[in-house]
Image (cartoon, rainbow over all chains, first blue to last red; front, top):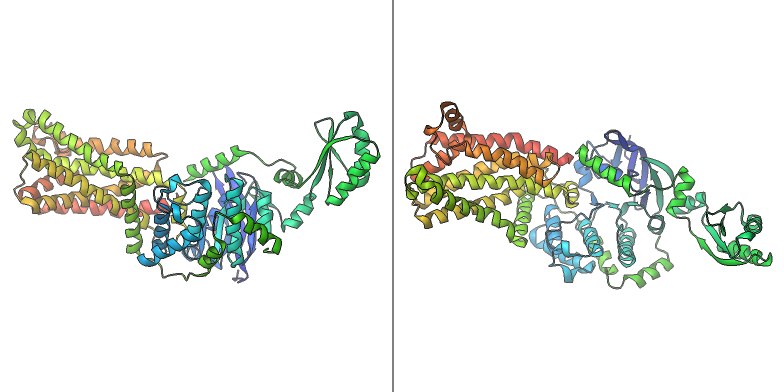
Length: 331
Length: 285
C-alpha cells in the first residue's frame, strides 16, 4: 500500500492475542493528520493494546499499520522518531524530580545538556510546575503528574501523540486542566490518538471516534453522529403517584416516542432529541393532570451508547485486570 | 474545535494549572535535534541511576554495611580456626570478600530492572528513538559505580584492620578494576533473570540461589586443597575462584596473566550472550 500523506494512522486488521484472549481482534483505523481521534471503550476493550501496537511497544500478531507513513513493524524506529506516548500509568520516573524527568527525556532525544535544561524549565513554567520542579514525582498529585507526563511528551514536539486515558482518576479541576492542554496541542496542529472510557471526554476533544468493544471497532463517526445513532438523550420522569404511570406513558409516547418503564414503579424514560421537546412533554403531563415528583434531561452515558451498540452494558474493572495480567504473562 | 464558547470556558478553568500561551509557545518552538548517540543515551541512563542513589541514599547501605559485616565476622570468628591467626586469614579473605560482596551487588541490578518494569516510565523509554540496549547498559554503568564503592569500602576497612597489599595502592586498584569488570559481565545474567521473573522478590531469590552456592563453592573463604577431590576440581574450575585468585595475585604483585585472561574472557562471554538476550527481552517486555 502506498503512503497517503493525509493519513497519520492507517491500520488494517490489527490482531493481538494474549493466551486465548484476542485482546485486539481485527481493528481498522484511519486517522487524518491534524485531527484528534478517540478510541472509546470500557476497560479491557483492547484500546491500550491497540495504542501499544501503534506506538511500537508490542508487535501485532496479524494485520498491519502505518504511522506517519512508516510501517510499525519494519520501520518501528522511524515511527519512534516522530511520535510520543503518554501511557495509562503516568509515564514518568517517580524516583526523580520533575525537572530531572524532563532533562532526562530531553537528553535521550538528543538535546545537549544546556538545551535540555532550558527546555525543561520552559515546560515546567508553561505547565505550572515550576514551583514543584525540585520535588520527587512520587510526591506529586495526580493532576501534576499528568501535566508533567504531557510536558515530557512534548520535550521535542511530536508529529503524533498517543494519549492513553489521560484523565482517568483525576478530579474535575485537574481533568479540565489536562483537557485545556490537549486543546492547545490540537490547536497547534498536533495529531492525537486518545484512548478514553468517558464519552464526555471524547465528545469534548475528538473530531472522530471509534467505539471499541471486545477488541473490535463496533461503531465509528463524529461525536455528533455517534450520539445521534444512540439518540442524543433521554427525559427521565418520576411521578408522585405510581398509579398514574400508564397515563404518563401514553402522554410521553405521543410526544416523544416509545418509552421505557424503569424498575422504580413511579419512573419512566423517553428518548429526547432536544430540550424544547422535553419541556413540551412535561407541559403535556401537567395538562393531563399527571403529577410529577421530578424530571431531568440527560445525555446518553457511555453505558447507554454501549447498550445501544452492542446490546450489552460496558463491563467493569475486572476485565481490565485480566488484560493487564495476560499482558504480563505474555511478557 | 476551538469555537469561541469553548475558548471562553477554557480560560475560566485554566487559572492555576498550565499557562496556555506558554504551552502554545512551548509546543511550537522546537526543532527535532539529531538523535542521541548510543554512548550519550547510555550515559544518560547511567546519570539516571546516579540520581536515584542521590535521592535514596539508603540503597547504598546494602553495598556498604553488608560487606563490612562479612569482613568483621569472617576475620574474627573463622580467622583463627581456618588460618591460625586473624591477621593471616585477613590477607587471604580480604580479596575474597571483595569478590563476594561486589558479585552479590550484581543481583540488585536484576532486581532494579524488574522493579522498573512495573512502572509506566519504561513504556516511554521503549517508545523513544534510542539505541535499544542503552537503558540496560546505562543502568549497569551506573551500577558499576556502586560496585566500585562497595569494593572501596572493603579495601579501606581491610587496611584499617591491618591488611597491607604488597603491590600497594596500584595493586588494590587493579584488583578492584578486575572484579568490577567481571561483575559487569555477570550482571547481564541477572538483568536477563530480572526480565524473566514476575516480581523483584523472585529475582532476588533466584539470583541469590545461584550466586550464593557458587561463591561458597569457590576459594573465596578456604584453600580448596582441604576439600574432597571431586569438589576440589569443581572449585578450581569455578570462574569465581579464578577471579579471587587473580585478585589476590594483583594485590600481592604476582598475578598470573592466564588467570586475568580467563576472568576477562568469561566476562566478555557472559556479556556477549546475555546482553543481546536482555535487550531482546526488554523490547518485548
